[in-house]
Structures are given as structure tokens and as C-alpha cells.
Amino acid sequence: MLSIGKTEERYLKEGIDMYCKKLNHYFPFEYEELSALKQTRNLTFNEQKKREGEVILKGMSPSDTVVLLDETGTQYSSIDFSIFIQSQMLQGNKRLIFAIGGTYGFSKDLYQRKDYLISLSSMTFSYQMVRLIFLEQLYRAATILKNEPYHHG
Image (cartoon, rainbow, N blue to C red; front, side, top):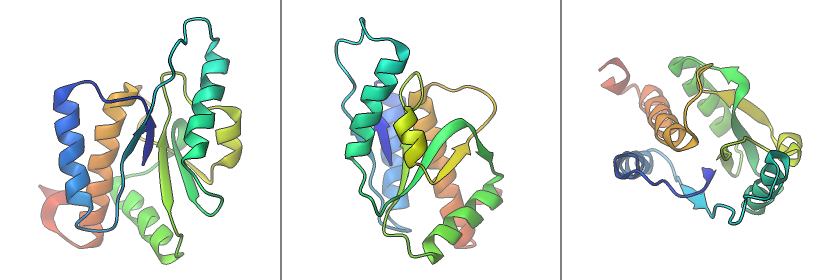
């Protein structure tokens, strides 16, 4: 999973760390916070998205399957999301990359590179909060696939 900028709130960091550890029990998982841009005051929103996109794209290889977490993406139930994860695993994709953009979303280059768009909700969450919410859903999907009771708790 790739995201722009550092998680600042301690409670979010603790939750993110907890779910990253839990996810590694189910499959190899890496969480990376890419450096936020500096000196953005004089950049337009589009310029900032473009530069952030360049940073995110550097963390990907051509063989990666790329999923952007985006408000315009497909919304899944937790069960359907677990089916999506399973289908990606069965396809033998080398790496499945989930990307979370910055405050203003993704660049055109990232939209062109993506394989899938997923939306967590039609509500808007802070990009830092999305990290924790998404990791919980990814963990939930893993427990559903293993038929563990977490999903029903």
C-alpha cells in the first residue's frame, strides 16, 4: 500500500501498525508512506496532484496491478471486497498496489496507470483516516477468506 505523507495522529499510527502486523499473518504486506511534497504554497491543485503522482508512480513497477482508492471508484460490501481480493490472488499478480492520494486526489498519469478504482464510501474522509479504514477492510477481507469469525464480531 502506498500513500502520500506521514500519518500524524498517534491513534491512527497505532491502528495502522496493528492492522499491518495482522495482515502479514495472511499474506506478505507492505505499507509505505511516501514523502509529502514541500513548498506547495505556490502550486495549483493540479500541479500538486501531478507531482504527488510522480512520487507514487516511482513506487510502482510495470507488472504491478494498481488499485486507486478514489471517491469515483466501485463500492464493495466487505464480502464482495474479499471476493475481489481473492480473484486478484488467484490471477497470480506479482504485486497488488493500493494507492491513497493526497488531499487533492490523483494525477491524470495515475488515473491512466490504474487497473481498478475502489471507493470506500460516498462520504469524504481525511486521507489519513482512509489509511486506517482501508487497512481494517483489507484485514476483514482476509479473515472472511479464511472463514474466521472477525467479520461477524
